[in-house]
Length: 150
Image (cartoon, rainbow, N blue to C red):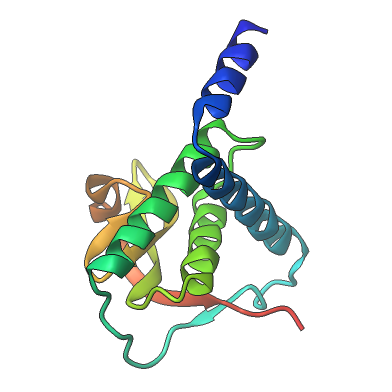
């Protein structure tokens, strides 16, 4: 109970715009999770094709702010989303803000006989809402985009 009171106190101390950003991040995570649960196999993402415009400094600042919000809500929000859900949520927010130059990346690795996959978002060559060291341990396979619901 003390932890909940502490979290609510911290949330209340944030500015209105910061609270809005966190609410948007939580909503994006919930929508991405719902898409993962409800979309048929093969209809969630599509390969990324074509050149992507380069972000300017304003775009980079927006992307970092959104990534921070998604990472924070993923750790302390209403559920703990996996990497694909986090990546899809962040990509939706970036798309909504019209930030160019980002990619959802998919990678794989084998560790102690176990096959593992991971999804993350990059803006240019900068990893967003994830650790560059963690991402570097995966072999890059593809860039993807979320398929729009009809």
